[in-house]
Length: 109
Figure 1 (cartoon, one colour):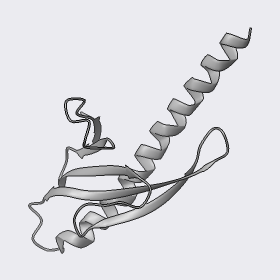
Figure 2 (figure 1 turned 90 degrees about the vertical axis):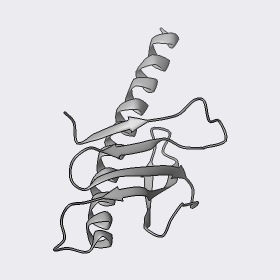
Figure 3 (figure 1 turned 120 degrees about the vertical axis):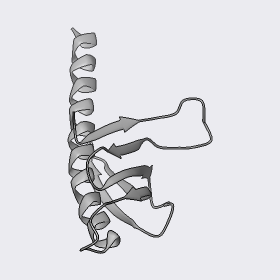
């Protein structure tokens, strides 16, 4: 099983942005929002340069967090988790951008 899963709910168009689900301890649901909007108290903002060389701002927010580790503060674990989730999500977006560019090149031929 992957550590991270990407989830969207097309039945809720009012709920913008995908969610990243972390399946291992700490179990978490992380909301990904373009721009600077966030939910909850634990969030971090990141930047990503897309395939068109435009800088995009993203905010990852802890929507739900559960951990069995009682030795470390949940907030400390959550901030480390957000950084790992961002690296995973950025790699996903880079892969998707690469596929879009390849598709555009195919249409030009």
